[in-house]
Length: 97
Image (tube, rainbow, N blue to C red):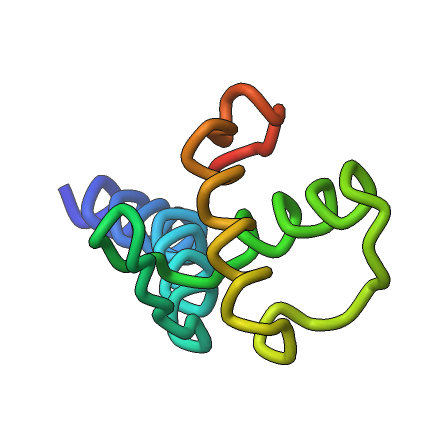
């Protein structure tokens, strides 16, 4: 019986980091996220890894300079949010973890 419990404990100790790791990675992605308000659609957007990838696609599609989103003029930010509402992560083939 003691051997069974030792094996169970060892198995749990080896599996625990694998179960916790994706949660920690997901939390790290949202920890540094900044929230932007979309006036036209009256909603808020979290800037995270997926949004960063989508913004890169928008920059290429619209032949823009690679400036950071935070430094864009308000009108350009609103243009991006309008584009983003029409282009979901699935449509852009952005992997969601």
